[in-house]
Length: 248
Image 1 (cartoon, rainbow, N blue to C red):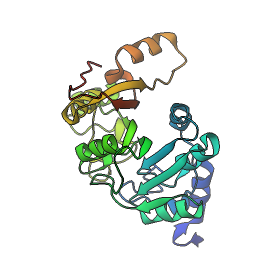
Image 2 (image 1 turned 45 degrees about the vertical axis):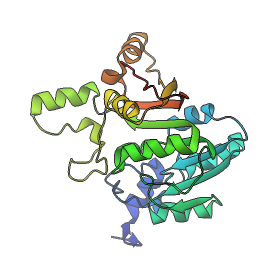
Image 3 (image 1 turned 180 degrees about the horizontal axis):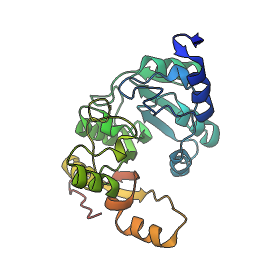
């Protein structure tokens, strides 16, 4: 079989057609290789872009191949920075001319208090060792926090666990419990317990992706912890030490 840099050519062509970097068939989310996917357009990017004011200062924590940062620069003329753990991601970002450094995002970050208008952590908080440090640092370095994550309490996961009595697989996206980089799976309620523990944060806006069905949309809005797959929240400082509690 013909191979390109050790990668089967038919798989490489298939990958470029479907651009699914998150598939375990082509990548490993414990150590992403962004050299095979230098650009991507995710559904949530447009919503996140809509939250950002033009000409603001933005940092993307766990920025991957820099596709979101690049989009924000083009569409909102932001002053952008990023941190990415994978060497391939940093390399791809630098090829795009982005100001991205290699490093962890769940430790003390080398930025001043309120240095940014927005800090973004898109579908990455469940992959770090210290989510509480990540959230605390986002609060410290920015006025607004935009955080997204897959909701592990999605109803299909609950049914799978109930019927089969093992780690539910619907929200593992093709991975197994032992092979996924999602080491801190969480639900909507879990996230808000973390927000309360960190303190001094409140909800500014939340993302809702319509299913196109009025009845389904009613239940998704009413019970997001049960029916919503991807969660996106924008948080802001409360200005006091009172924890913000949500029953969502």
